[in-house]
Image (cartoon, rainbow, N blue to C red; front, side, top):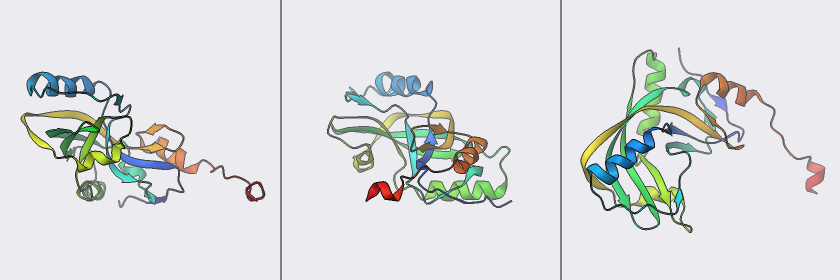
Length: 181
């Protein structure tokens, strides 16, 4: 069955692959201990690490929400402003219909530089992490149970189809035009 697109209407700020909280200790271990990077974390640690698929998307595909994948962490970079890892995204095929898997792969292939921002400096923008000069790690590692989802304009992470549909059906609060005059 072909996944249905819904108009975002500004409800989701971005969609992406969200890393579970417990995976951050694994990332830190591999970067600090196994790869011996002499790593310097920057002052602002990213609260909800993810690989961005689409920023301010026009359309949302609820079928994709909750789809699981594995990240293979291959590279690292830190320029004193942004710190991040470059990744390969591997969708899990179990229990996923062909149309949904094709759409998921299409979305993955649209990401120019799949990466995760780990931390930034006070004057930096997380979006600039993609511009870093990533270097290959001595030891690659995987992060499992990463899920596709969305970050809403009211700062919620949505990781399931049901919650996504609920979010899309909520009325949008728009200011009264008379108040804008």
